[in-house]
Structure formats: C-alpha cells, structure tokens
Length: 211
Image (cartoon, rainbow, N blue to C red; front, side, top):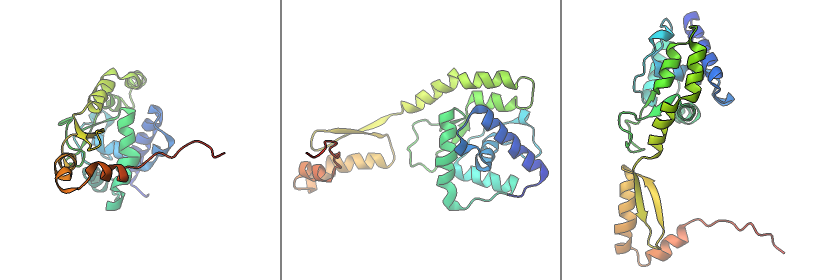
C-alpha cells in the first residue's frame, strides 16, 4: 500500500497505538490502523488532539478510508472489516455499538459504531506526556465496561417452541417475524409442529466410546 508521507505517518502512529493497547496480532495491521483513524476522524494532516467521535457505519468507514487515505477496499471486504477489526475493537473497549439506539435490530442498515469515552480521551492524548496515564486509565476503563454491559443486556425476543422449549433472540427486525412464524403460523399450517421441529433441530453427538 503506497501512501503519501503524511498519510503513512498517521497509519504508523495508529498501529503503534493499537499495539500499546494490546490488540491481538491479527488486528495489528494497516486495515485496523485505518479503521481507528476513520472512527476518530484523524486525517493525514490532522492532529491526534483533535480526534472526534462520530457515529460511523461500516460503509462510511470504508468510504472515509478511500476519500482521505486513498485506500479502497472492495465491497465484499465489508464483512472482513466488521468481523476481523471492528468486532475486536468493540471487545477491546475501543468502540461502542449503536450508542444512539442500543436496541437497534441487528440487521438494521443503520447499525453504527463510536469511540468509547475512554478511547476518545486516549487518542486525544497520543503523542503527549499524558499518554501513559491515559493508557492506564483506558485499560481499566470502568465507564467502558459499564457501557458494554448495557449492550449485553439488550431486549430479547423469547420464542416458545411447539415442544415446550424456549429460545432467546435479539429483539426487533426479522427475529420478530421468526417468532410469529414459529408461534402462530406453524401451529395452524403444520400437521405436527412438535415432531417437525424435533426432526429439524440439530442433536449433539454422543461422546461415549463404542465398546
């Protein structure tokens, strides 16, 4: 990847910051560095002290990389960025999912991400004498842990299966339709719904050894 000196310098700094945080080696690459720059809106000639925390969807992150760093990822790499960079950023405490609407359906096209408050403070201190102190604060980050816990406690759809079992799905979106199909449509139009779901449900393989 060939970049202008200013852009290459910012990518290098972002990568160094990710390494300092301790992200897994699989996320210590230019893709992750560019993602971090995108969610902080740090342009090639911008300063870390001016880092922002805009709400950004995956497609907006990719468009930003192209517009400001000249790096174009193909549309089919969208899930790669989500699953192999952004997902880990959420787990690390760098990003929040849907802080504007925590109960947003998982299949919503408006699913977005934003820097956590502690990550925002950390990025703004990058390159200053206070960075080490902010890094320690970020790694503890009680505020970030609390916000992430809120996302783990999102509303759920409880689906009652014909055989008496229940399953939990995230609320809204297509999962509401799935619940309606199982609880209302199936009993009316499937002759033996209990047997139907028992036959289609995967079974665990026995771990017992044959004699």
